[in-house]
Length: 452
Image 1 (cartoon, rainbow, N blue to C red):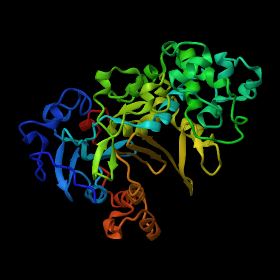
Image 2 (image 1 turned 135 degrees about the vertical axis):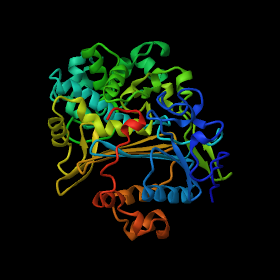
Image 3 (image 1 turned 45 degrees about the horizontal axis):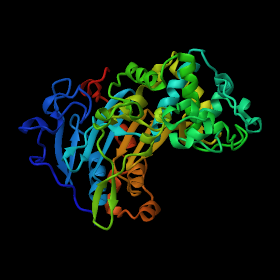
Image 4 (image 1 turned 180 degrees about the vertical axis):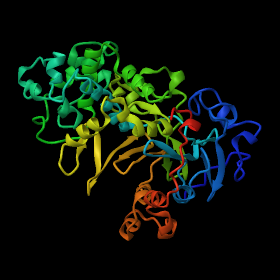
């Protein structure tokens, strides 16, 4: 079996971070979140992050916590021996739960907290898409606009240009267009555009991709990629006259998110604040830091589909408040749902449709980068959640299911999770909390350092 993560000295049950002589949260700025978290783990309202061991797993949370959630997570982490995780839950605009579990850095013994900076991988796509949709909201662009034509790009081989004029903004957001080849690395792109690798730009990667043509007629099917969203990011830059990652950061700041950054555009000092993700080495029985992801060696188009970093709190804040970015939130919500690629689900302007039954819709998106496993969910039931692990274990699919549903026996069997790990009292947790009125009067946003 996998070894238990070592516990930091002084992590006795129910101990407060501030009770120790040296807090892990008073490290160099940025290592464990944004500057709103003061010395000794002090939150903006004067409270402190609280720590407790449950089932042998360190829990670091805002507020008093929700016992069923903590039992579920700590039981599963005791089973999987994962280094760290975080879960943040909102309901109808209120922050009701935020906690980290285990450690963000095993070697340095730094606890995983709601403020830990995390690579979110492909969850960058819905974030970038919502920035692009601000152009649609203000009438600057339309879903029917043709971005490749508007950018003025043309392949040198006219035969490769079939269907380019047919590509629309909607196709790009719904993964309904894809190039045959998309050279991300400078070395691969340089000979295709006649430049040295050091001179290759983001636009060059798209121009080089156009030389390969499209894989299928746009709108005839969906194939998941980040290529269409990256094309739209370049269009945003042409229309707005500002780098896309800067415009996206400004979007985040409008809803109170201050800690987000894109690692493609930061120096090593900033990127060094990102804690490692981990992979399990079966031969040694140890968790080892995963290698730096290849996006760091590319030109920078990950600004729209894979290179964003933010805390679990900020990711949940985005899901909870992104509709506030638009003039008419209800209209924008309808626009997203009504433009899904498939009437039964599929993609929806940067999101995926996670559930479509009885009128209930859940917008979801997963992210994988290195060892990071990330998920965001925004439901018409009023719940928004951000779930992050710094290592992979497929058994956590059962955990995600148990949060909102009863767990059928076949799921326990498929993922080899003992049924006693998640008893009925730890299943269907969120609907049960709502039914019992246990989250009615909780709002931790101000305590967390965000506007209400």
